[in-house]
Length: 267
Image (cartoon, rainbow, N blue to C red; front, top):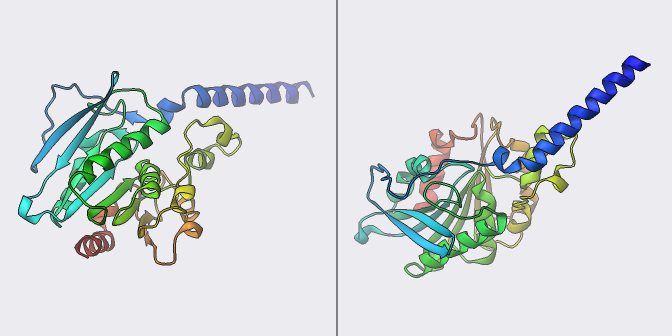
């Protein structure tokens, strides 16, 4: 009996330690930014320009705009990337859009790349809206595509729920942020512990634009079954495209994804 009680106490202590670490270290667990000095030059291989917007006294938004010749511009893709590194890592995806006449505007979140400021869920939404307003100075809503990858899908869905666009495209989306953690730590009340909600399911209900979702069955970061929970909130005309054996970062290797993306951009 004493031995059983001893092991029970050890289990309780381990449970509490992990729970406390999850609560207080969640920013470090969920987000993996790579900061870059303002003086550093990105070695992008396609035409581009950088824009820095002084958002507040203590925060600056860094945006990379990947360009196409003016005579060939069809529209703009507002690209919201994942939870790691910075726009230099995601720039590899821009040619899939620029070759179809779309400029690609990538924004770095606070603390990512050259962007500075305090990171919060509301700040992510506010900065996304700032990027949209910047795009509206040049493009009409029917020339704007809102694109989210991984963590950026919740941000993209929120923006599309309050602003018009041609398409909302989500690559490897999630139901909400706590549901991802719950997949790995189901014994914790993560919905109450995680500060970041990013309820993609909720925002999709208010998106009037056509929605296309890409998700792979072999995704180990955001499981396919998690993304499947979004299906009830899609319109009958929306598309949920399953990529057999696709994982979290290799969907662009599949012809199904590239062909579908090309068809959307050429409409």
